[in-house]
Image 1 (tube, rainbow, N blue to C red):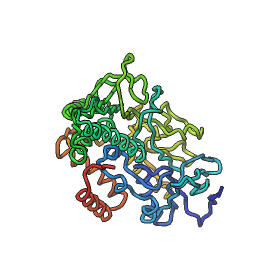
Image 2 (image 1 turned 180 degrees about the vertical axis):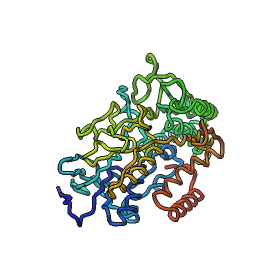
Image 3 (image 1 turned 120 degrees about the vertical axis):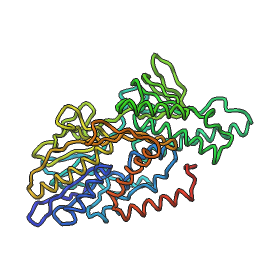
Image 4 (image 1 turned 180 degrees about the horizontal axis):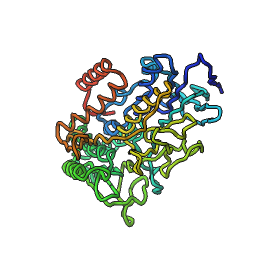
Length: 449
């Protein structure tokens, strides 16, 4: 194992190591790299097990075949060169708080052969931005048989499995000249933002397959989409007006919405709900909740809450003296000094990255650091081709401003554009958008293989 120890001298810059290149981690690495990294006051290192970044709110579009993930990824190595930080590929294995080092696991190539050896990296400041994983709530069979949407690979696996089921059904109907006896059943468990957006997108996928590839497949008759939610309404964490709008849109798309429905177990061919009623399911996806990644518990070095998140103070510190911070979905932080925690959302991760960039820059200058305060900027939900809806928050207004239709869809797209501009700058973001626009004009609007 190659060891790279950090020795503090007057000539050695402060080393900031960020573990996790998601919405929070990559935003922070970019800002610090172009600030204290470029100025030579700190060495910024980003660690991630994957070679490229993908914005997680778009995973449901990958799963529905609406976008090609490769055209929306940002390669860490190239991005690091352009933004004055260093990228190290590998997963976090352990943290030595006394020696101020982390150990990164070995990495294998596409052929399964070792690519990078296990190694250690010293730090002066360590930022954990590890994101979250799916919470199966100990439901029997859920982890084994239900697919998830945590990564691009998982989204692609879901898309391929669903596509195979639809192709088999369509070709069986063509060859027999008879109606499909039973529709392809897709069950989405959890009617939060991911579940609602995925359900709406799947209906569009079925229609596109009919238009492009399988004219014999009737999207309404031969594809059955169920959305199961244990609460009284879809989007239970959002205002009731948005929930009602989402329910209406899903119903108009032919999605079967089942609220107050508890999932008891999952197997290869069905989902058991309520008092034992089995719902046939060809493809099941779990989108019912998140928790902290297992590595945090395995480390045994931090105080965790019941969801496995690292407890941090209002400055995002694990403790005042260790130089270790946590942010994004893996961190449990008070929103405004009360019992309410910052929600696991992309906007919260972005706000924490902006805050921590300022806080660490101030720390290097020995300046006072303010407390973090979360500001809810509103919520937007996409219904694919059926538009979007949501609410925007403003300090000038006492309540949320509800939006719908083309304006809501435009605002939803703006969130992604802002993310790309923050990571690449306006010039590259414009070229990036133009290349995507051209791709959409020369390729089908659904991925067919």
